[in-house]
Structure formats: C-alpha cells, structure tokens
Image 1 (cartoon, helix red, strand yellow):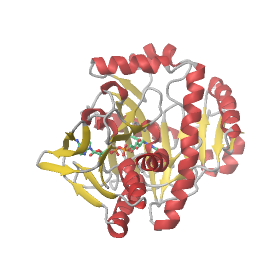
Image 2: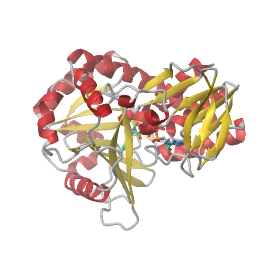
Image 3: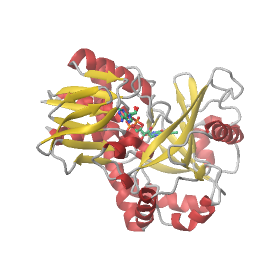
Image 4: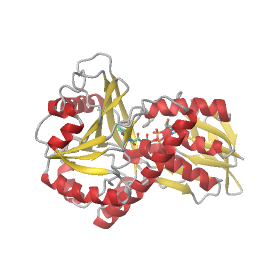
Length: 399
Ligand SMILES: Cc1cc2nc3c(=O)[nH]c(=O)nc-3n(C[C@H](O)[C@H](O)[C@H](O)COP(=O)(O)OP(=O)(O)OC[C@H]3O[C@@H](n4cnc5c(N)ncnc54)[C@H](O)[C@@H]3O)c2cc1C
C-alpha cells in the first residue's frame, strides 16, 4: 500500500518512519529543498514532556485586552482579520474554562509521556546524533500567582506519572549553579528532571537519511502539493505544481499550512510566529534547560551552542518584522541571563518559524471525512515533544 506523507517537518518524518516500519511504501513530499525547513528548523529544542499546560487557561480572557494593546513584549497580536481567525479566537475563549484547561493539559501530557518512550526506542534503533541529552528543565517563576498555579500543576503532573518538583530559588541554584549569574527576582522554579533536549532539525534530517537507506522511503523535496486527487470520493494521490503522484492514502503533516491543503477546517489552526537565535556559549552557560515564564524565553544547550527561543506573535504568515522581534527577544534574554551566551558573536543563527496552533493546544491526529485522507498536524508549542507519539498513533490507525 502506497502512502504519501505531506510535509517533511519533524511530524512528517516521524510519521513516515512509523508507516515504513509497518511495511507501507512511503513517499514524503515537501515544497522546501531540505528536510525540516519549517517550524522544525530552529525550535527551542526542548523535549518538554512535563510542561504541557494548554495555552487557553482561566485568567487568559481577562489578559487579552492588555495583550492586544501590546503590553507584553513577548506576545504580539496583530493578525489579518478574517472569518477563520474569529472562529479560532471564539474556540480559544471557550477552552479557557478550568475544566477544559485541565482536560487539554492532561491529554497532551499523556501524549508527551508516550512520545518520551518512543523517542528513546528510535534513538536506540537508529543510533542518530541530534544533540540529545537528559538535560532536565527549570521553569523560573517570578509572580506569587504563578507559584500558586504551579503548585496545582505540579500535583496534577505527578498524579499522571511525571517527576516534577517545586523548588525554592536556592534549591534551583543547587541544581543549576549558573542561575546565580542570572537576573534575580525569581521566587521559585518548577524542576522536571526527566525533560530532555535535542535538535529537531538534526533529528529529522538524520532520521530521513536512515529511512531512505534502511526502508526505501522516497523524499520528494522542492515539490509543492496543490490539491488532493480523488477517485470515486476517495483520496487517490496528490496533485503537485508539476504533475501528480498516485497513492492509496495521504497524510497531511503540513504544520501551520495544513488547512490550506485540506482535511482540517480553515479555522482549526492559527500560525503563531516565534524566533530563535543559536549562539556560542558564554562564561556561565546553563546545562539544564531554562524557561523564563514571564518573558516566554527558553535557553537550551544543544551540543556546544546555546539556543535562545521564544515569543508568540499572532501576525498571520507575516515575516516582515522578524529582525525587530529577534532583537527584542535577545535584549530580554541578555537581561535575564547576561553570561549564558556570547551575545556579540558573529557566528550566530537567527530564525523565525510558525507554530501550528490549535485553540485547545491538542494536535489533530486521525482520519478525515474523505476516505484515505488522514491528518497529523496542529502541534503548536510542542511539536518536537509530541512528534513520535502522534506519528506512531496515526500509523497504527492507518494500518
Ligand atoms: C520559536 C519556536 C520554538 C519552539 N520550541 C519548541 C520546543 O522547544 N519544543 C517543542 O516540542 N516544540 C517547539 N516548537 C514547536 C515545534 O517546532 C512545532 O510544533 C513543530 O516543528 C511542527 O512540526 P510540523 O512537522 O508539524 O511542521 P513544520 O516543521 O512546519 O513542517 C511543515 C512542512 O510542510 C511544508 N509545506 C507547507 N505547505 C506545503 C505544500 N503545499 N506542499 C509541500 N510542502 C508544504 C513546509 O515546507 C514544512 O517543511 C517551537 C516552535 C517555534 C516557532
């Protein structure tokens, strides 16, 4: 049985992997000339198995006017207004109840814990190098209200099998000594020993190479998919700008662009732009991954470099302000952790990508109304963390 996987991001490549392992004849198609050219290219690198809290949460509706007025430097809301966005916004507000927040967080947590086991298996099977490390993670909290919410969240996560602790700042500094060289004023930290780091782009590229060699998976790069080919109401292949490819099933793994191809409604996913800068390390680079919750910035040591990533901009597919937003993020990062990176280095990689965000922060994984068309998309802030589990589950469903 021939299956086309649309999208060679980390979700598409892992989907191809589990399909190939089940014996399918797999072709991956991407319009970019290389694997992991979209959101998977320069993400934060954090395998955040314990930090799955949904974006839509109680208290968020009250913060929206301030966010829309630009009072939070880490979030910009200036999207092109359209019906799909209004529907998404309405769905998002509905997800902000305590019950929905709890259910969404737990559902993603379960997927994340499944992903953790699956990624370990892939690592031992394929022996691939992607700066993978059991780094642990510290989420730094500044406001008492954040600490109060964290107490509840820690209890919830531990009930579901995580190993997470709320620490004082001196306890956190014992875990990661370089915190003493970071900005003061934090009141506590959530420590998750079992969270990891790894470079999603390196992983996707290395895995794609193994899939080509070991499983005969074809990668058709530089080809844009324009439409689904249907025969008798069933998916029968994909139309490209320059031809057609036949298949018995098609899986849409197009990330933020998934609605444009079909299988998910227009209003199901919003692109949320974020940025990263990868720099040589500074004098006191943290070995443990750090998240500054207030500024929405993460610091991840990937091999000998430090990646600083964050911000969440609802600006449609706009990229024009990247240079200013990256500059803003770096200035904040420098205030938070002045010695963590060599901020003046010329040897740097600056990047922006679109997170495929659903209103409930859960990915969309499953069959569609069109027989033979499947979707695996909408992984939002956690696509790297969740990729293996959602890929495994969609492959099982197709087989
Ligand atoms: C700044 C930032 C930091 C992040 N940090 C983390 C983190 O620390 N941990 C974590 O778990 N997640 C993180 N994420 C989220 C994660 O990167 C995404 O959820 C994940 O990469 C989505 O993967 P994907 O394969 O679904 O999409 P993508 O990687 O975007 O892949 C989609 C692919 O589809 C292709 N495509 C689009 N349209 C077409 C078409 N018509 N025809 C052919 N090809 C097409 C694109 O070229 C692209 O390669 C972060 C994201 C950002 C932006």
